[in-house]
Image (cartoon, rainbow, N blue to C red):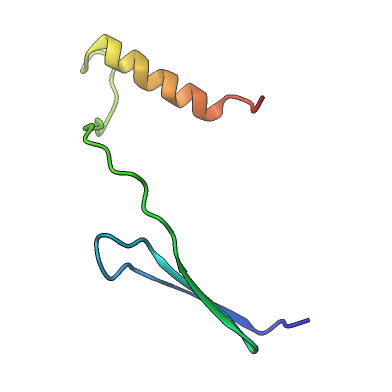
Length: 73
């Protein structure tokens, strides 16, 4: 069993790439990029207060939050 390994994480070198991760052992090395999340044109609020934004939009955001915490089916 190879217990000597290193993991290095680097910031992307360009805006098109994700984070670069390199895993190295005494026998091999593997480098890969973690994909960036898809960009959305939607402007997310910095803070949520139900009286500060459109009620329908607020309800939609709350549904998204609830779906993140819903038990898996």
